[in-house]
Amino acid sequence: MHDDEALLQKLQRENLQLASINRRAIAMFIDELLISLIFFFVISDRVSALGTPEAVVAYTQSLMVYVLLLKILYQALFVGLYGATLGKIAMKIKVVNHDYFDIPSWNASIIRAVMRVVSEILFYFGFVVALFSPLRRTWHDKFAKTLVVDA
Image (cartoon, rainbow, N blue to C red):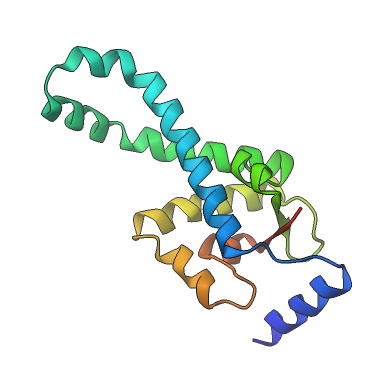
């Protein structure tokens, strides 16, 4: 808890505000929608040729590893380049390194993206922990040593 208090004081000194859970959730919804649209666009020709709903479900399930890789690539690329995904940009929030409050390193961006997908796979438990954290940190924030703040 001592580290959390120190970080909260540091944020206050730097005049930074933590992003609200609501804005983070809306940003996540936007990002998931974009990824789903990209995925649908890529597979739409093949899906229309499959015929039965069972065949469509089997086909989309067979591509789940690619969806997870797409999510990791999307998150890591945007956070590594801009400190924010398109959803976060739309919600005017950004991801920052918790030591210097700048864009996370590529290593941290990749760790964050992988742990985000792990959290999703584990019934979003890694996201739920943010509700009980004074810094609103998810598992992926903790592992990557990041915070999400207002832009």
